[in-house]
Length: 257
View 1 (tube, helix red, strand yellow):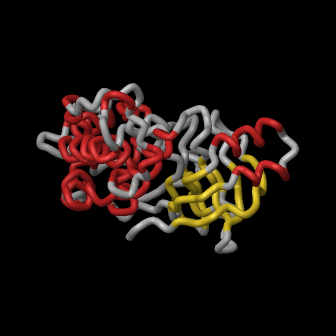
View 2 (cartoon, one colour):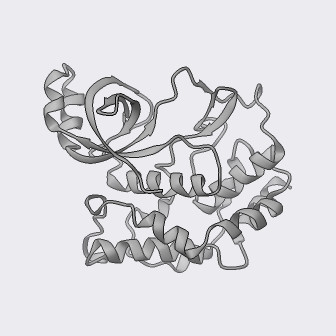
């Protein structure tokens, strides 16, 4: 399903977590969203990772909040007293990304919450596939909302694309950092998750997800002549990562043992 595009109408409050300082906003559809700014320190590639990884998770039927594109007017900065927030809004004028706000959601507690082994295995597989460095005990990026686990914040995934020259030769590599995954102790069927989930990610589906990345976020410099070339490189990388053998899944199994 294509991503919806909404317009930010009110800046509600900053979420001062991490370096990107996302914010809760209200939009023209009267909904509340967590906005990720294109002008934040991590740059537009964090939004690219958020969109691609989040929509892959949705395709795998993993619980992620709705992702939307957000048109942000620089004039919204006039109502903010904090100069840092003013600068961030002005630097992010145009198209940004947001996730549906989950009011009252609680942070995941690894000692109190026990997701099923199947769900844990599928999340571990997914994070190994997208090379997500940010699902650890220290920073799980998981929420509990209406007694259900939700996956958030995938801006640190696909970290290969920082300083990327377009080479996809490393797509088949393992992901050793999966050993730090918060759900790894519960993931007792990674091989089963590998068989189930990899079958859902067809080349056409991956290409369709990548196609939704806006041109404005694809700033590849000399490595890519056009946004289309950069999208093709992302798609090729994601497809090649699913070529057998799945080293990332095998590494996750070894890490658990």
